[in-house]
Length: 492
Length: 100
Image 1 (cartoon, chains in turn yellow, brown):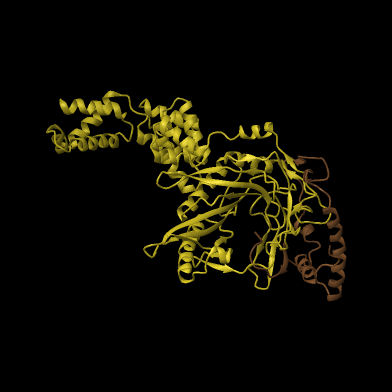
Image 2 (cartoon, helix red, strand yellow):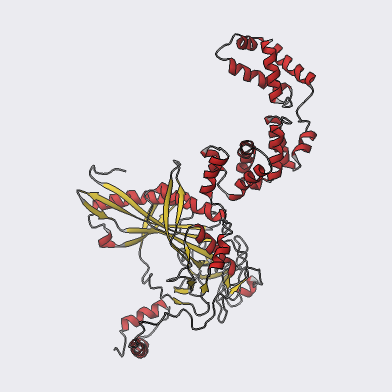
């Protein structure tokens, strides 16, 4: 950032995140909660706001919210209630949104946010309350707006952070950490393309100049639906607010308070949004149709028991218990099922390092192609363990194991039967092995000479000969035996 | 204690409720609402210092339903009373953006 030499700038960033919960049905009716169905087919008198319809709270939505809250270290309120937030909009058929105003389900808490440099940043959570999503307005027609109410009444967890972030990178990392957590807990699919997660950052700057502290107005940006938009938007605002304050000394929090701006994905800029008249006159009051929720220790204890190990403790454990590198441990803790594969394969007797290599090699490559997580590739922990043990025993070489894995991913089947069918089991016939070793030696006299002369490149030369043996054997030479035989012949 | 509320406030409340109102109606509404509010002023005289706020007049809590799929309407049924439609969408005058 271009600053005048004396200015010290600290961006102050807080965030609201809306997370759609992955319940089968909506929050107050038993219509299907699903993205992408034909318009107005998952609707009923309750979510259409027809007169006389009565909402009944979805137990699963309450429990998913508790689970997320507990994983964030929040206190689950012993008593929480439902309030109406009144405003008129075509996507809100009741003309009020059911939300939680003064007694939210979860209060207080924090999340550990891993940063790109390996550091962990703690971001405080003020509250996480449950509310209903609105429907969807479509604006493709120039003269009217089309309304689809399938989304109306979808359970939404609103997570409000402390203003603990200080850069676009931290804001993005916070969003990603939250996505990973809610997926980890299976409370949301958190698919950005399907609008399962939306970000509303609020951003201002603390500027120190000549011993005085200046604060710019707090800018809130609504409805960002990608990490890229979030990071670009925050970065843009930091630059813009500083430039504007330098131009106009009255551009301060004291003079202007808060302002709403919208982010334009095409230009990468935010634009001022005139306050809707009376926008904040929501006239909250308790919803008479819904009973309060009382959570005792037994109930919250049952939910807490479902949480299990969280991503960062698991990452640390993998580095300690399995001696994985930071990068490996991090890659295996992006989602819970992938790490479960590792843990279960190790429990079945495989070595962690081998299983990790299998997971982060061919399986990760396949997952990447398919855009899914490692566990969704379809190889089970039992199969991983068997293949890893076959490698340890020298039954298959690393390259043969890879071909077995490719075959299993494409066509299914078990490691041993697949290796047999593909004729990839290591050859234990010594005569055959000797033939391959001899052939590699005879075909490469100058390489052999280098090794025998104790050349600087001897190690590389040995590796080359091993490669030749594996090639000649089509991956069927057991590496340890082949290596030992090669060494004997090189000396002899 | 006010007997009538300000016409400006009446207009504000009417606007929030999307009700259009003639000048005469606004004047009448001002005095009627004023009478209702003065009754609340009367209630305010009570000392509620030691009274717990009430979230609901009934004593029930945790009225919750299982997350089991139930019946929905067809889009034909849902749109049966819609003043305007475009295939299976409700059609309304042009608005900008989403509410959330």
